[in-house]
Image 1 (cartoon, helix red, strand yellow):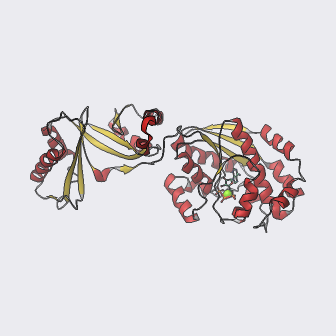
Image 2: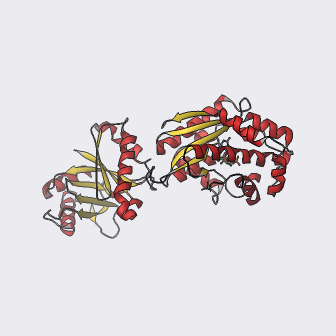
Length: 392
Ligand code: ATP
Ligand code: MG
């Protein structure tokens, strides 16, 4: 039996006159994401993308790809029927054989957007429901409390049948490319990949920056960051990853600044360098993975010191989340297993034993002024390596 995938979008519906623009971007994202995966034909109508897959064996991988595209809310496989009541009944019976198990209760919900079709929605429900009830004597109709909801949709080109319970949830959010660009400070930890995912979910394209302290951090730590970027890229398509050599700055901070100020001076250098890279690449904001109070450098006073180093919006989507919630999210998006690999990060190598938790801007600025800030930043920028990371 011929099957199709129905991918329904969500919030774009609210876009009024701008809706076609958002729809076009969504369609482009879908076709890019499926391009190297399967031969498909895409069509858009009534807030639904109809995805025909040439090779039946590729249905699952196409479903998986669609489940990672921002903007799509639900995805389901459906049987394609002729726009003929008899064909709809027979296909419904056959297609839903596995779903309509003995003893279950069911109902039919129908939608008719083609008003030429001779049965209206209530009539369609009666016809198809009555037929299934007769053909499967061991199931019962129950419109209030069904185990299975049989969906029948009569659209312009064809009719479709599926069991509502079989649909899967998509990412939701807005299509990438509808919301400018931001630059993610991507460490090898659990938090920043989740932060990047959350902002890109709102349609924002993402560049990423990693500060790398060779030889204090190993090649394997770098591979880990690349791997994390490639997982995020499954949702965003290609990511430009900038690797910034950070060793010299960290050594100077260690040698010249009071130990308890080391982390915050370092964080201010990161923000400044990130801002320069972001501006150069037309990125409008920075993204970081802090959550209030998680560690000493994430108290409100510490965030004030860090964030005041730059003049650019800093998006911190995890700011009110608990660690456990962040971990759950990282498991859902698929970054957790990579994030917990035990390779050292540039910060863990130079962590002070007793960092200040209630720092004052002026004290940290006094400490950092012992360094040649501008020339250190310029030297780091000169050594930046740009990598293009494709979806894993
Ligand atoms: P994460 O789990 O993302 O590493 P964290 O809880 O370890 O975060 P910090 O080490 O205080 O937090 O870092 C705060 C944020 O600064 C990170 O979420 C990340 O956005 C950024 N950051 C930290 N280290 C690096 C790095 N080496 N390269 C790029 N960004 C970094
Ligand atoms: Mg970290």
